[in-house]
Image 1 (spheres, rainbow, N blue to C red):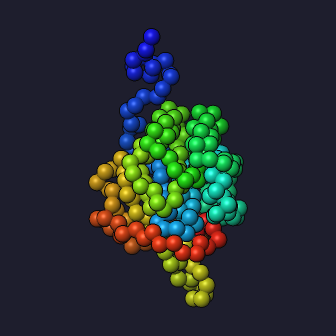
Image 2 (cartoon, helix red, strand yellow):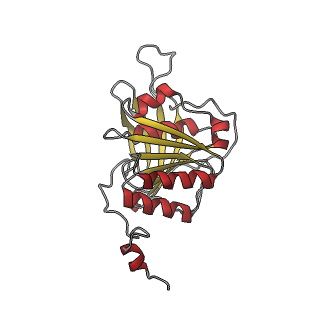
Image 3 (tube, rainbow, N blue to C red):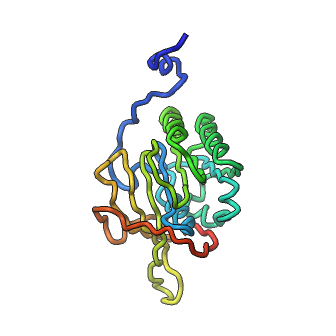
Length: 245
């Protein structure tokens, strides 16, 4: 006998389909604190920028365990973020577990299982693709168990998903170094908010961001710009070694 949707929810077989109560519609729109979010590299080779943005914009408010899941092909191409950068950006008191999975389906399965386990406080997954069905499952699991999820995806990511936001991140020239004009300064990124369920009117806004490694804080450099983001380039160029900034 088939059960109706209300019965399935009441028995705990699936989560409620309504969205969680919306929080304040401000940057970074609950990234790393609630729900499922997508962070996409702006162009091939912007994986370092995407990684730095995820870690700095979603720094945990309290101690917990971060699970970092990587699809094997991505780990081969981009390598692993340096341990020192992870400690600085994610927080020195954050416990971290690493997992490498072969296929995208394995990454998504492991992400959902980690949410359900209750053993982690945030899941970050590097994966080549995730369709609407897969992201909907993660949204329901995240809402039910209170574990935020961030998917880091390649530059070709397009189409509709169930994620609360989609960010597209590009590297920017570093800030001037106040001690040595010839040296690299603070890391900067350009973050374009392509989709935002929490605040649909915010979609299309772009933020120029700077990471302060002394105060361990992220700030907007040139303010918030309304309107569509700059056209995305898909040209392929040499990929630098990955860093979290």
